[in-house]
Length: 126
Image (cartoon, rainbow, N blue to C red; front, side, top):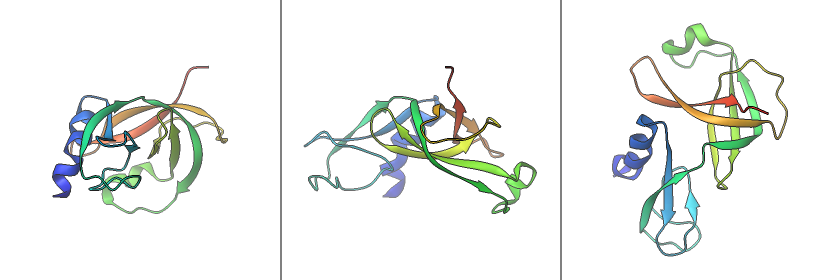
């Protein structure tokens, strides 16, 4: 079941797009994908192509190797981003910049060692 719920997200990521859920009943946008709308409890939703821009809400720097595929990347920065459409997305920050709240960023998708697209943020042009 969970694969069906997230299929539109992963298909969009393969094309460099952020595809999230939009509730068919009330129009609430939601990310991460889930079975039920938290606003109206509807099970019905449609894919929605969201904006790729947002601002940094918070961040953390990881110094721990959670998976062998990231050994050479440590330390790396994870950011939580408030996207223009109102959802939050977690991803890696690719730039080595001085972080601050409200820093403008753009979402891209970078393949991991197995070719799966992962959310990666870059600082947006001023």
